Image (cartoon, rainbow, N blue to C red; front, side, top):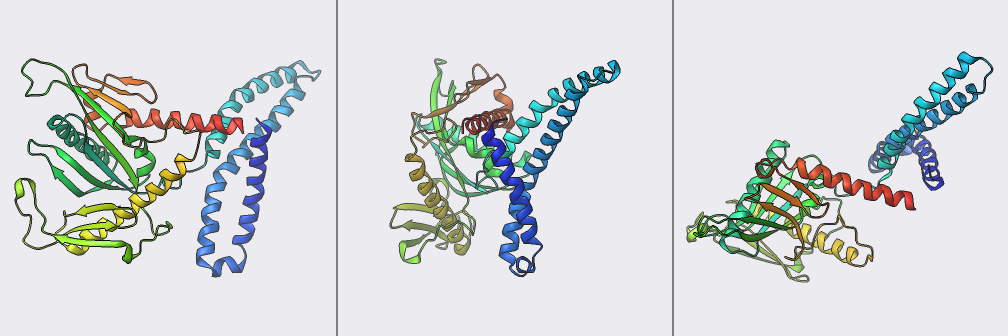
Amino acid sequence: MQKSLVKKLDALAKRRLQVNELLSKPDAANDINRFKELSKELSDITPVVECYERFENLQSELKTAHELTTDGDPDLKELGVEEVERIKSLLPSIEGELKLLLIPNDPNDDANIFLEIRAGTGGDEAALFAGELLRMYVKFAEDTDWNHELISSSESLVGGYKEVILKISGKQVFSRMKFESGVHRVQRVPETESQGRIHTSACTVAVLPEVSEIEEIEVSNSDLRVDTFRASGAGGQHVNKTDSAIRITHLPSGIVVECQEERSQHKNRARALGLIKAKLLKSEKDKQTAKQADTRKSLVGSGDRSERIRTYNFPQGRVTDHRINLTLYKLEQVVEGDLTLLIEPLTSEHQLEQMARLSDE
């Protein structure tokens, strides 16, 4: 194992002792916020340190086994050789586990998300595809025991959506969904195509972490313009007869958000404000990312139509994720919500890249 990694692990082991000592002091118990902060740090450090202790124990056992291989007793020598082989076979696995545990956590991994789907190139066919993507994500959320609620939608006259925003909440939502951002392309023969030609359409997907109360995103009321209007459905049919729909404009950034799914103006306002904060947080993170010269391959796209991340080819029953060159002939399973087929390989690739980066440090 690299000296730099051993140095980090030794520092974490020392820090765990310090945190345990701090938690045992009366001052920590009297300060609730400090106690929570230290407890969380301890829970983050402990799995790494325990794994490191197992690694060190194996190293100690390996040293003892090597000593046995030089013993004059043939039986002990043979036992030593067997032990050396056994321990050597275990070390790569536990070293890999250590590197995985050392990967820095994305602070948003536990966050709920706003999932935005917008029809792109392809007209009516793109809108229909947006509706199918929505259905796919809803089924995946339900299969994963996540909650979901419709925040805003703009339906197409032929079916599907020009734009739809969904909130998904549950355990590790952003962690599993963050690689869905980008351009999703569909290739198939539309029902209106009389000559059987394959058309290509596209939708953009954006995954925004919900801003928690501890996020340093403050929105002043003086920076907001709030407009109310009467909610309406497809074809102009009114959902209700009161001005319950909300449009909030964040004046400094120009971000505009509408929410009309609830009959309560108060609820629509709260949801719209939450989405405003999520967009502002993403904007700030995008600015930071733009300054980094070495952009990681696995970062989500900006939503530009040229940034194709995945293709759904219906005639061939094929789905391809272009970021990791993964092709599966399981399109039907994927569109029925079995996104684990794609999410797990993407997550594994991302972890391998981070582990390689750790080794290079």
